[in-house]
Length: 166
Image (cartoon, rainbow, N blue to C red; front, side):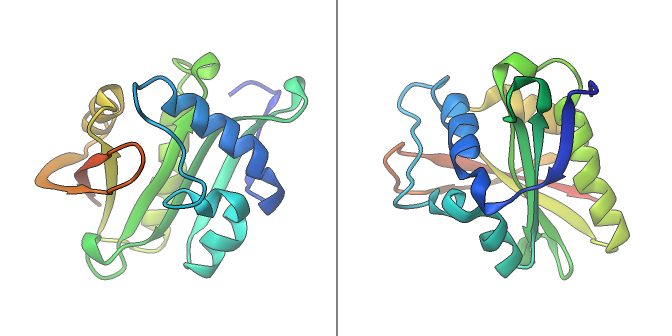
């Protein structure tokens, strides 16, 4: 990461920047929109929401760009990944910052947390449209499981389930 990119724990006042980041990523896919009154409502107070759920959330801030949020990642407890397992959440990188190893470094942060807590596995759910993300996860040792689930949200989202044993 460049000197101007600062990794830090997310704050509730990051809402506007996170909404811009994730909204921009969603806009790359037809029909994919943020649902701030529904499944994406946690973005309004991300730090509080993740803390209350026993999770953690980080942002990568670009100090050279007036504090713009360039990327994000979080984790939360996951019973689907086994007792003590964690779920990878909201790994997004703004298009301008991609292909610099940022996603891999953010994933490493979550892997380090998993190792530190002796998590047996990490799981995640990813929109079926996010094909490049699926290749990224496969490259980093995640296996796609046969199950899917539909979110019944404004984007008409169906998600694939992925898991990586630790």
